[in-house]
Amino acid sequence: MRMQKSARQKLLKEKLQANPFLTDEELAGLLDVSIQTIRIDRLGLGIPELRERTRLMAQDAQVKVKAIANHDIVGELIDLELGKSGISILTITPDMVFERTHIARGHYIFAQANSLALAVIDAPAAVTGIANIKYKIPVCVNDKLISKAEVIRIRGNKYFVWVKTRNEQQEVFRAKFIMVSLAN
Image (cartoon, rainbow, N blue to C red):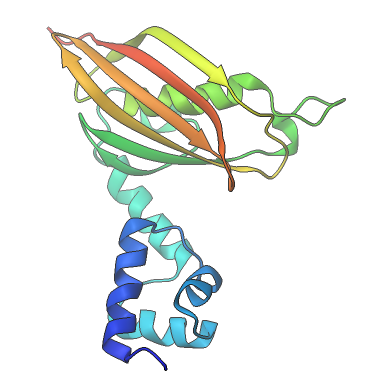
């Protein structure tokens, strides 16, 4: 038995709220309908396609950043709630990997996490005080890394931030940062 249109559209909105990076193909699979049905439902609901959703989220997030300049953020900042959380995406390109192994250089993965941790700080300026990091699995060319930062505690001028980075399948990196606000 087919799902009613209103129920399907409600579920479509819920799926996209939980994960705005779902493609039309992935949504079609989750809802057991054709890609064309997903596109018609999205248009009817006024929901843009993935690329446009990502662009709009990035624009919204970048105007909120305080502690770091937008051009200093490694990856594309797509969601930001100052003092709470943020998300960035970084696609590993051939110039980011070691020539012999084709494995991503760790400093790119760290830089994405570190700049995201700075971006979530609700202060005009901040620096990294401590970073406890763990590389979990190798990252390769064309891997799309999604980093999520969460401020877990604020004590005085110190922000305790956890950043977890995933590829399409699993966590590849995680870090616990103590970021220090330089505001008086």
